[in-house]
Image (cartoon, rainbow over all chains, first blue to last red; front, side, top):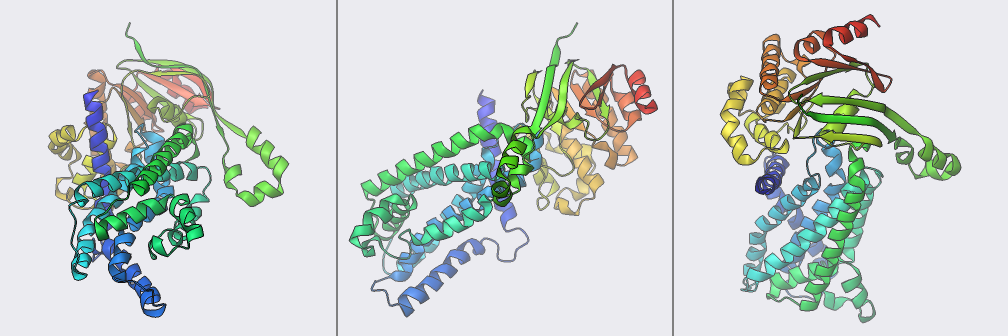
Length: 256
Length: 245
């Protein structure tokens, strides 16, 4: 039994390593891409909302960066997830391995890229005369686990269903880019008009989580209600993803 | 009498033809009644009432035309497919030799791919590390082993793939027409390895279109025709009847 668990761990590690190695292989800038991408977006939003539309806010640049990096992790994983099983068709058809590990490796890989990008957030904090807080020590692991569960649950569901209905590839990309604007990332939650505030903040599963990340990075605070809400959402996503996966997984080898 | 390690008991396997649903929503909406009945009725019978047993240490060859259902049998043994009817019992760990390059990543080196493939096929990292040198030596690819495998020829890929599988210590080895691409010398090496596997009690299921290989390796041969077993028995007889047909 012990060697089974060991094998499980080895499998997750080697698949995540593979994704890490492969992602920027044969590119010149390599890891810099995973920082450059959200930074480029931060720059564009800064130009559009701070310079052109003159949003009334101090430190808008660091505000953007603190929200965009965790979002990048979520959207990268979810957008890639519909293809995960398709790209591993030959494995699924021949080897009886726990297939739910495949999307997990993708999510973990994006998580590691996010962790590697945290120094960039710190750099921005310093530029704006702020500094990391002690609360990061428990805050980051907490939110990390919540986001991991949520992203994995969704990815598992999308990866499974996409084998049967290939439309999800398009839907995932449209969905994440629309959801982005309903999540307080480019605007603070305080700017949402009162009558929509609860809706935007709690009806969108990503809002409590992304808001928590940003408050943690900028002020070192964690609001219990937001953390609790995102935790409930993440458990729900995980159960949903797992239920869909269990229902469909025995048919995977037939449809590929 | 040794116990059977693989039992097929009146196994039927049919697939729904999912391409009707993946044809898109437009097709579905415009031809709703026919589409629904098409989904319900269009099943493809890959295997009909197949029964056989394989004993421990036995090598069973499976021959037959393309699309007869050979690979479905392999999928059922590997545990990636479930039978629609009947029972499949497999005792022990079945390791499949993957088709060329499957489970490999072209951008990774030969060495990295051995690690990846070994772990995917069921070994722990520690075990693969222990066997790494042995695997590389068997593959005779030492001078290319730190090159990304996208520069490998198909023969070299086959070598790498077989070398990993040959060191897995499987209980049951599943081989689906893979050896054709290696050069003569390596093919011989593979056949030798399989013979030594057989001696050490590994059960082998061998799908091939190469009748000489089948005769050389297998103790028994099943001829699959029209999704069912047409003939099963000694390799000489079955291969002879198959060739005559």
